[in-house]
Length: 277
Ligand code: ATR
Image (tube, rainbow, N blue to C red; front, top):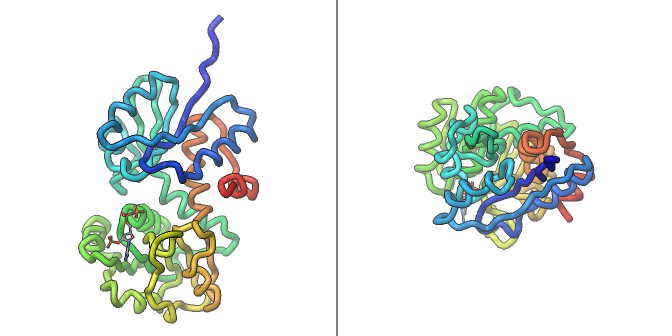
């Protein structure tokens, strides 16, 4: 009698202890009665490739990849989705039965789904989007905003050259503002996103002047610890609609879980509670 293998998945990064993904996937596995496991794996840059090539032999069906391995993960993959290639990084890997590693990037998808399911009737075409930051997360956000039909993206980053690199990759629909002028780009924006790590617990606050925020704009923060950042608090006081960043984390996890475990999980209040536990 051949016994069914127990499917394993997990998240590889360093550090990874703070990740909310293990408790989220555990919740989904329990909800759907799936015998499987999702494990946090703290792996150094030196060991990443060796670990990645070993995991399928140990019963892993795929993994999430986080900082600092996302670019290497894409480079090591045998096949990649268009969106992973465009973003230049992978956060979801599928280990195929034929031994090939398939790379995807679901960060932008998670970002857009979070806005779509916020109950705000968010319309990407309603006006320009303002993006604070031009790091790895911003790349996924910019790619997905353009794909969703945003007419123009106003972007500002402390290190201007990173914003310029995004502009050269994504084209003239991006307009760059100096970091000291970031407040000025908010006036026209109907969607505003903080993709920097500023405002996160233990990090410095976001000091961009927010008095230019337009009433009724949809404002979201990729930072989800704390859940309600000062940025979102101020935006709310100014009559903006706010969406916290936890939903992006939940939504980006959906495609991976579905591919690995064969069931599409729900992003609902129970999933939110599980991620916050
Ligand atoms: P991630 O993949 O999460 O985007 P990242 O690539 O390190 O991580 O990017 C972090 C973002 O936060 C960048 O836009 C970074 O600006 P720089 O490109 O100038 O580093 C921004 N950021 C981090 N600390 C900052 C600070 N003290 N002031 C302004 N921006 C900051």
